[in-house]
Amino acid sequence: MNKADESIQWLEIHKKKSQAMSKSVTLRAKAMDPHKSLEEVFKAKLKENRNNDRKRAKEYKKELEEMKQRIQTRPYLFEQVAKDLAKKEAEQWYLDTLKQAGLEEDFVRNKGQGTRAVQEKETKIKDFPRCVFFGGDRVTITWA
Picture 1: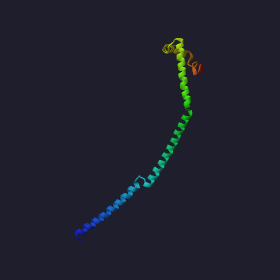
Picture 2: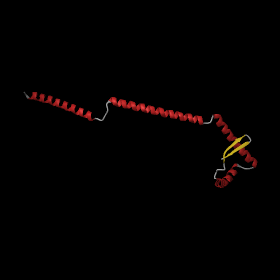
Picture 3: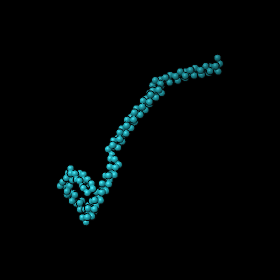
């Protein structure tokens, strides 16, 4: 055997040993690898996405029910308009009454603030009217 044949033979042996070592390292790495296979990852992601979809569907239904509840408890448009008109009529009636008595709104407001503190201490708010209804020429007051 000459030197060229020996180096070729040595190269082949070295190549086989390297391949064997590479296979061994790969097998050991796979055995110790915490990563999952592609199929397992796919199944886990699919399950997670389905759970997220179910969760979102529940949230959507809850939001929809809350919207329906708000709509049911909200007064109709004609009721809102009637309330606003009644409020404006009451304010106008109040201003007209003050004008007939020869008083101004600012004067009544300023005088009322001084006596209100005394009244609140004496009555502890329980004797103040809860609701005041103005209807045409009538004023209805309900007490607590």
